[in-house]
Length: 115
Length: 115
Image 1 (cartoon, rainbow over the protein chains, first blue to last red):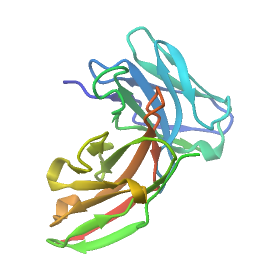
Image 2: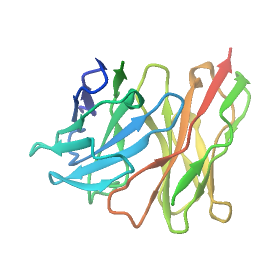
Image 3: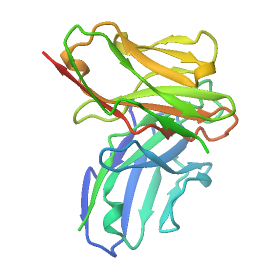
């Protein structure tokens, strides 16, 4: 049973650049959520995608955007990178409407470093 | 706004000691509750969850948690810890009324078990 996968594992960018992170959900899941985890902190919700639309958004600026594809995979895009965007970006998948529709399963994350 | 507070930031125990990690949340409605664990170098894994029913829930690896509604608490316990329990532990909640299952995390507790 394939779990949640994310790519790349690590990424180094400079201020002002743009970055795209990718996520494939766990087999059978249709919903993808993105979280930012700063060092020493708990994950913070960025947004969630379901049926190729953004369903809910956390307190993040418009520089953070996303997309969901028909195969349920998802991308997170961050424009005009700031030093403060350095963090571990986590993707979580779940099944909307399923018995455990509120249970999210996490991928290994992408470590983004902005210099 | 919802929030989650984990009282212990760093806990150091010897093997075979008992563990209790505190978690309190702030939300007026009905919630689902979760404990996730992040072992060194690994991704976030679900330890246990509470949706409804028996407020004492059992999870993997001998962990359990008790939901006390009157205290807005969901403390994690283990009677006898092992060196392999060394990890970061996160408490998380989501609002049952939400259709997205957006998770609000605490800041995490680092558990160090000495052999």
